[in-house]
Image 1 (spheres, rainbow, N blue to C red):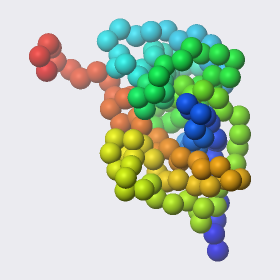
Image 2: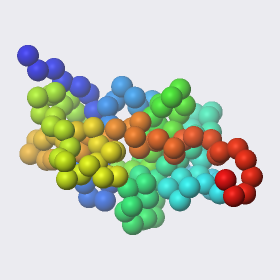
Image 3: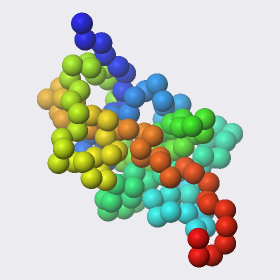
Length: 153
């Protein structure tokens, strides 16, 4: 018998993605992002969210898409990774769905490069192809503190 898992659907560059809701702390409108010096290009900065400072990763930049200005639909999805909260900036997010484990397929071998590493699977939800995000892969190296050491490392 197939089981189903709850996911939060979000959109990025016109494509639907999903993250398992178990790893999501909250979803909120994006207000002010404070830039951080020497951050990787996909880290827009930090945000103050419910009393905590949270790094804000722009998934458009992380995936190599064109940067767009934030608008009223832009959302911050705060996820937990390695006991740390990290914010994912996405174009829009407002839908919760249950996805049957039978509906999930592994990413095609053709996506085995960098972009494929970010996906845990691909599912069809209400006639839409949805890319299931592997949050740990997306955040690998992204949420790590800057390496210690001096210039030339």
